Length: 132
Image 1 (cartoon, rainbow, N blue to C red):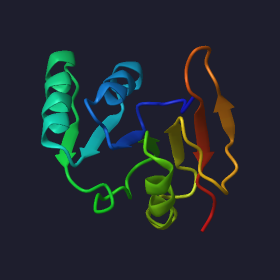
Image 2 (tube, rainbow, N blue to C red):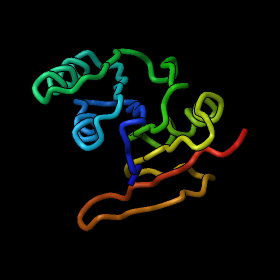
Image 3 (tube, one colour):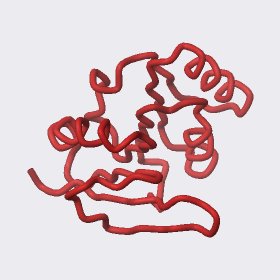
Image 4 (tube, rainbow, N blue to C red):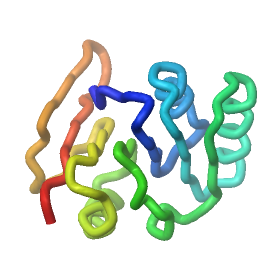
């Protein structure tokens, strides 16, 4: 849904084991970075990168402190409260045209460009950052 290309820089905030980033890298050979605050998740993501030959970064960091200014695509699978708290950061740091892909939970007052609800799965929402 993000229509990734080799020119994209994908950042997954709350990356968990990094599986989305592995798939993004395999599909488009784009730049990828994962951010998670849990040591075990970061270890598993790094292991996934190693096993799948992904050239990317995993940072153990608070997602609110991560530098996302170079991202063209942000992946999110976060609880609604965290997403609401994250909105000012996204609006401030992302460039116009950047995409935000959220699995399961939408932003309350943002209109998605696209919504996909695959059979037997939760919805995926795609937003595009507007001019500031």
